[in-house]
Image 1 (cartoon, rainbow, N blue to C red):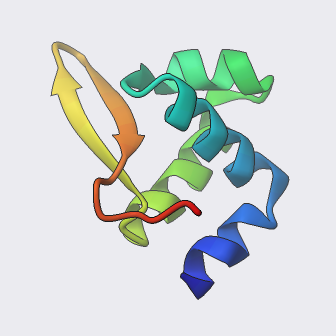
Image 2 (cartoon, helix red, strand yellow; image 1 turned 30 degrees about the vertical axis):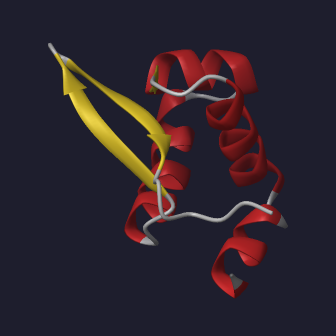
Length: 75
């Protein structure tokens, strides 16, 4: 989709999507470590991707785990 393409042009958002394609169910802490950015910076990007319906999250104890939403076409 056009919205997804805009997000993929942003390096950080593209890195988030790439990491979650390879390893669904990562926490913010795990994603931030893999990408090499602070968690608070990552949170802004995750919020935008979630609001657009690209990411989904589920609670696991005290943390949230993120994955690509099923309806998102990444090709």
